[in-house]
Amino acid sequence: MEFARCRLLTICNCSITMDRMTAPTRTHLSPALKQATPIVVDHALGSWIYSTDGKRYLDFTTGIGVTSTGHCHPRVVEAARDQVGKIIHAQYTTVMHKPLLELTDKLGEFLPAGLDSVFYANSGSEAVEAAIRLARMATGRPNIIAFHGGFHGRTVAAASLTTAGTKFRSGFSPIMGGVHIAPFPHAFRYGWDMDTAIAFALQELDYLLATISSPADTAGFIIEPVLGDGGYLPTPPAFLEGLRRRADEYGIVFIVDEVQAGVGRTGKFWGHEHSTATPDIVITAKGLASGFPISAIAASTELMSKAWPGSQGGTYGGNAVAAAAAVATLDVVRDEGLVENARFQGDVLLDGLVALQAQYSAIGDARGLGLMQALEFVDENGKPDAAAAGRVQQTAISEGLLLLTCGAFGNVVRVIPALIVTDDEVAEGLDAIARTLKRAL
Image (cartoon, rainbow, N blue to C red; front, side, top):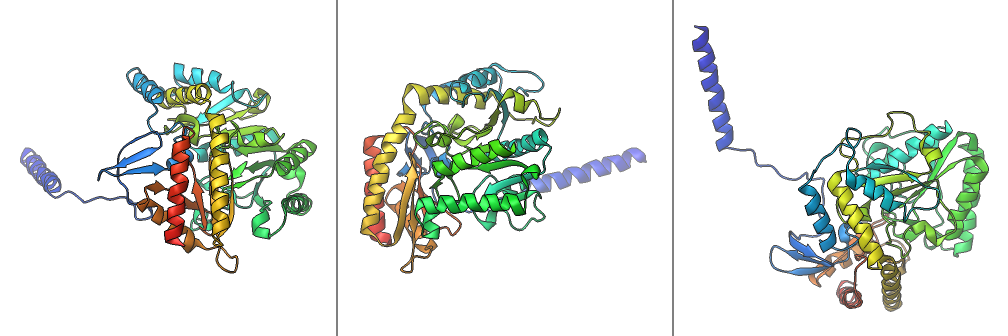
């Protein structure tokens, strides 16, 4: 009797399974994901993306500044393919693997002096959280000061530091406590000259330290050397230097978030190198492995040793294939002179964007460092014009050029070529932007 009942249940379960197999659920991507373009990629190479309908596009998005050596650089592809055939996942707190050791040595050629200890994760957000965790553990202090317009990630702690737009931090409160936001020297938004904006922002930081988060409660400052999602605004060197002085005076950990600006994008290997300020912790990700997911924080061994036991780790951190790709990426950046190329091509690109600004009153500002450039759009009253930026970004697609928007109001179009971009590609990109502006404005 029991056997018969089990047999009946088995038959019923098989029937249910078969019904599910013959009528599968139709799945799709989350509706919360918004595509900037309608393009479905077939393949990509260098600065170019080729869609499934046979069209090609000059990619001035680079996966939001990720494909630093261009799409599918042969040396990066070869390194990744070779590593896949050896080992894909070697969990780095269980067994160590050669690519991570090689990457750690290689990074030493590029890291600021004294930052000789590295921890690896997968994403920028994870690295940001590791940095603020380290700052709190090292100082025994609770508070972190970030700066208005900064983007540091989407995970809860990283989003708590992010003020590039409410969409990154709203709807899932309570967010992490102990975070205070100080003004950023945004001269264009204030309508001031740069010196006035810097003096104001440093004055307000001092006021925050006197009224909200005393230095004795402040573990760290965290800032991007160029604001990313906040509008592609270079942080003035004098402001970074002012932060460094205050960090030294009060024993505050100075964290520089180089997730987007680092690995040569600004025409220096690190964005903060446009100033004399050196961070206590540098965060890197995006361009480090040409598209493979890997991130890292670097600090002095003295500072890193203050992390509590067990506070650093992760299943996928420092993946072997991603590490091999990162080693190849750093070799390409060095061997092909890509930092200098970013500086040179960035100057050409900015000159072209400034010339276009002179032709259109809708362009309130043209700005950037290296291959991290932007146009900010305003209406006839000088107010942010997100509609104009959106038209430019969408119209550019039909001109064979891929761009992205950013900024708190969505009124900034960012221009992010790969570090391998050529003279002809910059010229072609500027021509496409010129045609786009004529049609969209």
